[in-house]
Length: 101
Image (cartoon, rainbow, N blue to C red; front, side):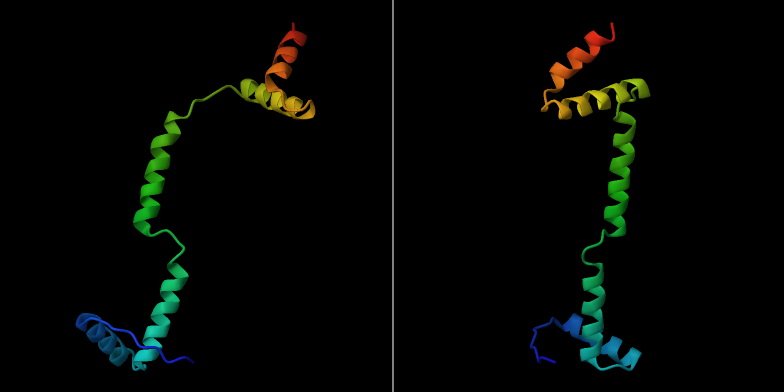
């Protein structure tokens, strides 16, 4: 282990001492466990953030246009055809619409 020195405010030191006494653990162990817990949660969304993201999603979903499956499938076919011909989606779309006449 490495010995490290930190400067903490009085309230934090009091909370550390109370927690260590209540848990019957050394203060250094309480700090290590607290840091491990914090590190595990640091990359995750908080409940507040999660709620905000879900709210934004719920507001945006009704705004997304609904298209018939036929239109979506036609667009996917055009994109796939464009990929096979070098990426010119407009030319492929025109040839597809001309071919369907």
